[in-house]
Image 1 (tube, rainbow, N blue to C red):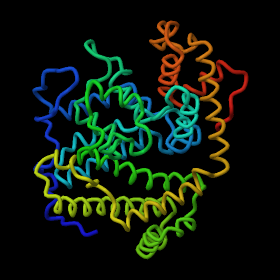
Image 2: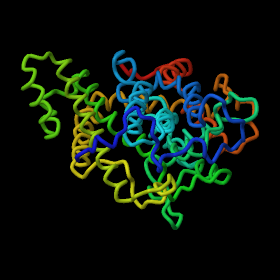
Image 3: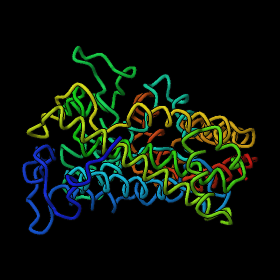
Length: 405
């Protein structure tokens, strides 16, 4: 996809008419005075960074359990990388960088310990009570579970940031109210009764660039971590023509490059090609749509920030490679089984004796709750754990804890 670099306006501060406007935000559920020094979206981003949930990302798994090595991505380092790419895309498209960055920074708040393994295990535990969805959990964290302010629970983000958190991957409902990807999680429906996030429309372009930045970041950096671990080799990357072409390019230019630098040269080219592809597609779709406001972006019947057909095929090929060579590697599967056992064991123990949830502020109220409400609070507690805290809790309560090393 060809990019018109003349229209990018790097560093100009110019805002497109279709950008979300922080000075015309739909506001916060609990009204607050405006800041004299920051826009509403800047305040959202800053609040996100100062949460407990953000700090916990440091010790939550991306792909490799933290004990595997200090240089592998965690949820925190992944999140920072997503935010950097989202901000670059936002600047190129002349939209609000702070909103794009904020959505990127908050998008993984609801993830459990041990990555998708922990989420699958917790969903199974909560299946009889509505299940578990990390996106819905992110919403619960920023609207209910963070307890920092005197006048409200959560961090009282603007409507636009909450919309981006919930809908960055597209509409959750069709025009008839049916779920587009299965039933809409109940916590999201419950919140929309208070503050309608318009689940049948697309989110802002800022949220869309945060979503595609997530794909770009983890496709690239999971390859990097896979090479570091030894689960991937350069020969395996040859299976994806896009990666094979870049390796030939790097080898031709730097024939004697050591492996670490060679890998980085591939990764940086991968990010550049994918970012430029998204910019080109977005420019083309914006030219066709001719939006005159952020509302026109939401009202479109398709996403604006996405890959071209060719790059989408490459994206699928990379994901196939990662699943076959890393995510389903026998050693990773062994560790995943142990991690799932830890989550399942802890859920059962806390349901049997909620008093074991140390320092959890709902413990004193659980005795009078229904079984479903109690299960949801146990789910909140477990989802908030880091990998290290979950392992320590399991060792404290059980005679044997699975080895995740």
